[in-house]
Picture 1 (tube, rainbow, N blue to C red):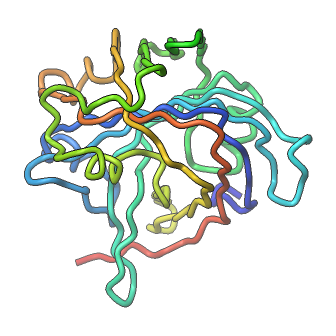
Picture 2 (picture 1 turned 180 degrees about the vertical axis):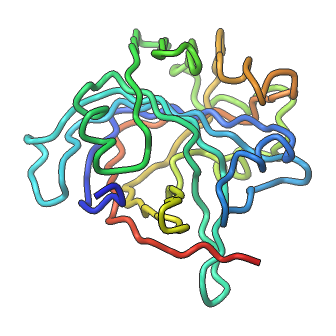
Picture 3 (picture 1 turned 135 degrees about the vertical axis):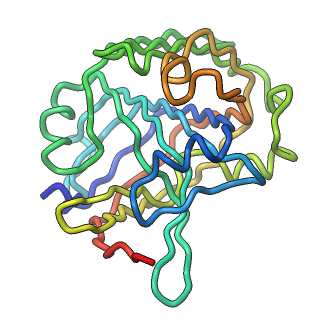
Length: 248
């Protein structure tokens, strides 16, 4: 059942995607067997995504029967080679924190995403959105302010990415989520279905990000490479597919 056996659908009322660049040696060691780090030169990328999700339900149920919650996830951008030489792009989960006790209880029975309880507060006005995440172990606390009035914003100062088009390739969520299943030495690939994403670059002020202040990220020069914001995105997940890990 933890292979995401039930296709699901939802709607993102809004989604904030922050992507940090870090030395590839820092992130490569966090990936499970079978995955390769997505890189630009000597840099890998860590995605921090906060979403307000509505109407989460099994795909065969109407939206009125869905659940609403806030979620903050931390995932590493990765690639998986599959038969016939194809390569899948996706994200490998480090942790997911949510304000939904229901999701912590039932989501962890149906997936390997590892949901943890958190307090997530959001304050919005016509010009900005303030997000504060207080995690149960203080390991992934986040305090970020998003300028939602400037359209579009520019890439952060010092970003290693070329332009907004280059950066959009590193704006989560991506097409797949990868979850390693040690019992079968397999990768569970959960493919996403997504409506018009069309995120726009935004200016953000990150007041706190406790994950980057802890091992193995502390002192490694994490750099905010891009920040994107979008609204009203139809989203879904197909059934997970098990793929045996290819060993050298």
